[in-house]
Length: 336
Image (cartoon, rainbow, N blue to C red; front, side, top):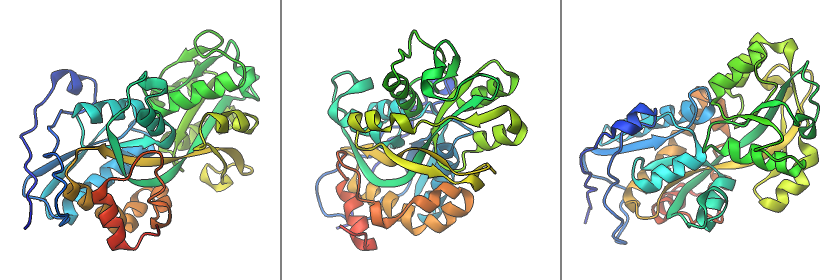
C-alpha cells in the first residue's frame, strides 16, 4: 500500500515573516510506523530553515530546495528561508515553522540532551544525514592588536546572529580563553552581512563565523579588505572545546579558499540536517535520497557540498537518525 502524506495548507505568521524567518507551515502527518515506500502524495510542502543570506546554509538550502522540487516533479514543493541559524532553526523546527533545518552538530547535540541554549528541555528532533563540516573562522582587523582569543578583552567583537551556532561557538571559545562573553568583550550580535560591513569600516575589531568553505561573506571581506584583516589562531582552545563536545576537531582552511599566504589551522564541527521526530518517514526518505542523488548538482552550486558523502552520512550521534533516512541510506549503499 502506498501512503500519501497529507499536508495542511500553510499558515503565514506575520511575526515570522517580518523577522525574515519565512511563513509557518504545518508539518506533514506524523509517522505511523508503517511500511516505508519512499513516496509521498501530491502537494507536499516543505520549508527549510537555513541561515544568514551570505552564508553557506542559505546558498545550499536554496539549491537543495530546488533539487527536491525538481527530483519529485513538483510533488514536493520545497522552499528555503533565511534565518539566524542553528539554535533558532531547531526551536522553529520543533515549533512547526519548518520541516527541515540545518544545524551545527554541537548545537543539535545540546538540543537532544537539553543543554546549553535549550535550558533543560530535550528537543524532539532527528537527523536525516550528517553533511559537510563547518570551519570556525575567526578574523581580526590587522590594526586591532588581536592575535589570540585572549586579546579580545575590551574589543568590539561580532559573535554572530542571536540564536546561531556561531554564537554558541564564539561564547565557548571566549570562555575557554578566560573571558566572559557578556562583560569582557563588547559583543556585537550581528548577522554576517552587517559583521563584514563593520569589519570593513572599522566599527568591529574581530568576528567569529562558523561556516562552510568558501563562505561568500568571508570571500567578500578578503576581496575588498585583504590588507586590513587577518585570521586569528584559535587552536590553543581546541583542548578545552573538545572537553565540551567531541564534535570539535582540528582542521585546515586551505590557503586557496580565500587566496591566503598559507593554510590556516582551525576548529571544525560537522553539520547535520534535522527533522522533527514525528515527521513522515516517507518524506524523510525522499529528502535523504535527493540529497545524495543530487549531490553533484549541489556541489556545482555550492563548493561546500563536496563534503556531503555517504561514508559519514550516518554519523549523527547523539542525534538519532530518522528511520526513513536509514531506509534511503540502505538503498544508496551507505556504510553502516
